Length: 263
Image (cartoon, rainbow, N blue to C red):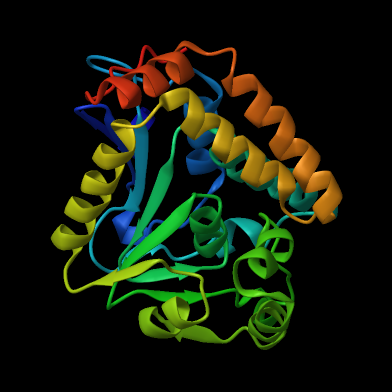
């Protein structure tokens, strides 16, 4: 990636993507978003076997991503602002649509676009130093990378409205209490190690079943129960045509560990 705006590392099937603008608190400018889009639109890079999980984080201890680049936005026209929002929404949707699990690992600030980027992951781990918020209204803006669309799914419409309307920031403990964050850790190293361990555990399961589960959950959000059940039923049906299902059930009956073919 040009100018190392993104740092990538692959360890045993886990791709770690680090936003690397520490002097700007990893703020999302057009370059970062474009490079994220390019990364997510293509096959995930791997030095060995297939990527089975992604860790998304920011460089340094001060910020995961402190937000979108305000200096860049301050001079945008409405058309440019719309295009910038569309780019941010494209990136968050691509992240959400990855067939492998994604864990956002947050230290320091995850504000505005940073909070929106984290919410596009499957779930969020944080350190005690993490600070979350959608403070756009204090700048005369609204969340534009998916905050209005996703936050209420994470924490409920009441909390989403309060956080967005006030622009209030919350710490990691509060974020966990309201359901935004799954787990809170004492140190960044402990957080990253735990995220890698979680992805390693998931990697022992059927990759097809994990991908179909992710797709069914994503497709069900915001839909009536009857529609969500139809989505689930279709995904459930597809598992019966997979080698993973045949291997998983055979291994269970034979009382041996499964060796999933991944198809």
